Amino acid sequence: MHLSCNICGGITESFMHLDNIPPLQNRFYETVEKAQGGAVTDVEYMYCRSCDYIMIHKELSTKFDPAYDNSDTASPIMVSRYLDVVSSIKKNCPNVNEKIVEVGCGRGELLHMLKESGYENLKGYDPASPENNTLISQMYWSPTEDSDVDCLIMRHTIEEIPNIKDFLKGCVKSLNVKGKVYCEITNVAELKNISGIFSMYPECHQLFSSLSLSKLFSHCGMSVTSIENIDNGMRLGVWGKKDSLPYGNLVACEMKKLKCSLEKCPKPIIIWGAAGRGGNLLAFLKLDLSIVAFVVDINKEKQGKFIPPFGTKVVSPEDIKWINPKTILVANKKYISEVNGMVPSNCSVLDISSIFNKELNNEKRSN
Image (cartoon, rainbow, N blue to C red; front, side, top):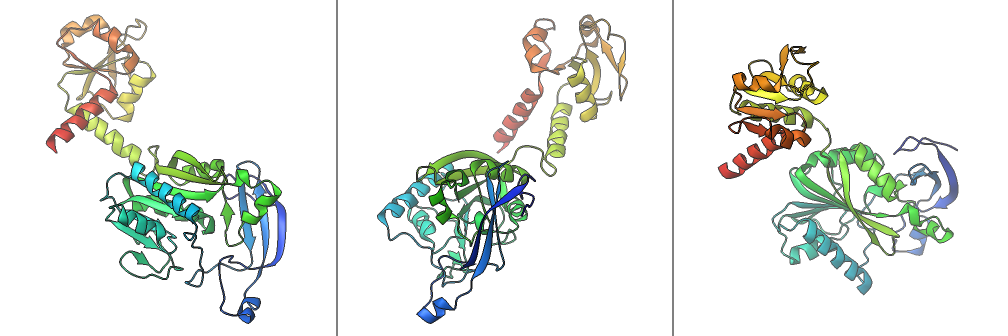
């Protein structure tokens, strides 16, 4: 049996088939008869060598309810582990007013510890929780339940979600612009010895390594910011954030902001450097002749010629005297010191990052 990997599209191979296995490992029954009559399923385990990812196929879907009990805080060792997670959250989310949502919160052990630590804006979701109150909702979470989330916590949760890419893309939408995600997972990279088989729970739909989880995050508009080893690497604590790479309309928004910032600069404005970056500044930002008057270049072969799409003329450094520019935008910041030595002192010499920083400081002062 071979199927394409859900994460990287590589070819997976079957390495284990089990018959008549309970679909939930922490579902308990009141009598012997009920336990013996509980549901069972066949399970197939598929492994992708390309990204270290395990897909788990079963005939029955898993449904969680309060009879499912995966609580582990009876152990002092696990209480210590919970305190480690609280410390990690305090480090990454120091503001106790931040909105924190835990998906698959179980009986709310972590949420109660965070509440005792001073966090005020907490919410948990789990259909297996015995609680149903303002802190915990006894239901499955969906991205429509919460918005403007500062931190989304999913501890051994994403392994149990079938359509994981769609789910995580929804998670990204629920986060605010600086939102973070904390995932705790069983580490596939440490399950390759024979004893690791017993940590491959059939209730899961997949298992991840740091590599496959990083790829998944990237597919869904997030990036991994830090990874910590837990239980000698058997588990991983992974922090991620909304990706700053092009996602949705981010590029268009940033280009618009840059053009608006540039238009506020004193005129005449000229660009220094008619190579690729200078031409891209004109074209990408639609800087027509009403915004950028000329482009300066020290290459005599380019001087006197015109750059598309607006026909911006390329002039020599000597022409700066009669142009008398108020702002010189340097296409490549590594030339800033060189340009400063060639232009009048009354010119404002800037690169793109300088313009952004100036606008950012203005926003801070206005706030």
